[in-house]
Length: 92
Figure (cartoon, rainbow, N blue to C red):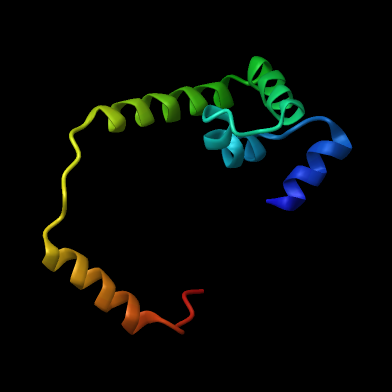
């Protein structure tokens, strides 16, 4: 991600892939003003990226409105056991 930020600073523009990578930070207003402005500029000219960000915002809103549920303890144990078994494995 650091490379993406350096690229933004150098060129003062952003490509669609960069918008997708930074869209969550953009929606959470967790970007420096210059980067946020760069993304806003791109979104104003790129319908597909605007649609992506709008869809992500809608998805986040819908998920936030759902009631929170707690998984059963057996599910948590299963995940922890599987994680321990997979430690040190390569997933490439």
